[in-house]
Amino acid sequence: MIKTINLQNFTSDKVRNFSIIAHIDHGKSTISDRLLEATGTLTDRTKREQFLDKLQVERERGITVKAQTASMFYNHAGQSYLLNLIDTPGHVDFNYEVSRSLYACQGALLLIDATQGVEAQTMANFYLAFDQDLTIIPIINKIDMSAADPERVSNQIISLFDFKPEEIIYTSAKTGIGIDTVLKAIVERIPSPKGSREKPLKALLFDSWFDEYRGIVCLIAVNDGIIKKGENITLAQVETSYEVQELGLMYPNETPAEALYAGQVGYIITGMKTIKEARVGDTIYHSKNPIIPFPGFKPAKPMVFAGIYPVEQIEFEALKEAIEKLTLNDASVSIEKKSSPALGLGFRCGFLGLLHMDVFKQRIEQEYGLSVIITAPSVRYLIKLQHDKGTIPVESPSDFPKQHLIEEILEPVINATIIVPQQYLGNIINLCEEKRGIQKDLSYMDEERVILKYKLPLNEVATDFYDKLKSLSSGYASFDYEEAGYEPAKLVKMDTLLNKKSIDTLSSIVHVDKAYYIGRDLVDRLRKIIPRQLFEIIIQAAIGSKIIARASIAPLRKDVTAKCYGGDITRKRKLLEKQKAGKKKMKQIGNVEIPQEAFLTILKR
Image 1 (cartoon, rainbow, N blue to C red):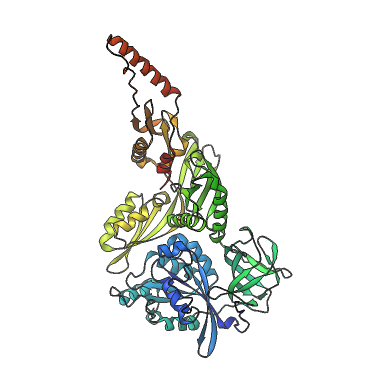
Image 2: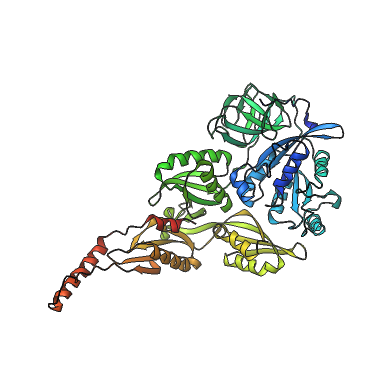
């Protein structure tokens, strides 16, 4: 039986809520492990590498996808402190997870790799924490590695973020160097939460997940008051009341407690069964004492859209259930039911980026054992209609209005920050120019690294930009972006025609300057996939009534003259003419059967 812990003695001044923020692969999960070990939270029996990376996809990819929480007890100067660590992802696509986690903290550890230095996401996460007025402790990690240059990295931190040299802590999370110094700094530098136990209960629901046996588990930060087991609580947004069945700390897994007090971070279980009940950003209060709720989180804006379809249509209901459970765990995904002539019933999903999309698909396959097809990513355009008929959002070519009805097309753009070693600068500038980027700034971080700022169309970034960026910089460039609204663009709908019949599922929205190359590539791929028929198949890519690319598939030829032995040549000619007329008629009325593989090749990334 799990022992119940008593948290009554941990008043607000004995509590520290903090987060670790860093660029991807700077050692965040490793330093979390060392902090948990140093405080005795993880024992030899329970510890494993990357303890807080609980998802299979996180352990396989070596990245943090989901924010996790763990509590520690730490003795300092004769006093016992409760430290709540809220771990955050490092990749640009999971910024929403970071901002939510920081909302429940008073301080943050800014972790920087001594071999890599400050990178794009380091800067983005610093400003996220800075904007929320958190106390930030700079830490240089991996100082024991042969390629480490702590002096150069500390100069970057001082010049970019205006820290003082004495504020920087030097550590090696792998070997445990400097971990005690980090723990002392957390207690001494990070302020305690300001809540009061005497006030009515006011708690923030900042994360949740689905447990197969107990329903929905909610992570909460208690701002004011006390919440106890057996009490009736109400969620402000859904205006629904529940009885608290269990609560406690993540120490490091769910450990029950009798009550959670002001300033503390923990979990509660109330028997919620559906995702609509546990809205991230909601306010929890005692049913008899209503209070003014928190403003809630700013909703995440999906940047990239893609269709998710089951390979077998009989798995549609299972896919629906899996997506519902995953969106509870990942509130930044938007979902809309869709039907495709080629792929059947499925969902149109909005994601924060390409990695986010990849991870979501992988979680569906691994955690729920489903095989799914994910279509090529697209973005949301805004189309101004003629004669002041308003503006409509368009995510897929099938929703695109006729060209003569369009006054102007607006595409989403982003402000991108790229940090790259000087020797790869030319490659990266060429890539950004090729992707229709406009350079906004170029500055030197130090003698070796350059900060590039570009305005780029999101549609260009949503396909293969990140892969090319890493390839052209040998993996050294780092990339971060923020949305920058919409700007006018010369975009057109490119139709795919088979024997002059439009195939709507294979249409796409392209830039005028690239339409010819994309059309030529598309018809060439279709020519190789579509099987030959008894009549000629003509494949065309068209913009409006203008054909921009064409290919043809030769017909299968049946030898109708095989049974003619000798005789007049006119007999053979007559048979051939009859065959020719038959093929012409067949071409007019015959339908081209497009195999599923053709759609998958075009629609799948």
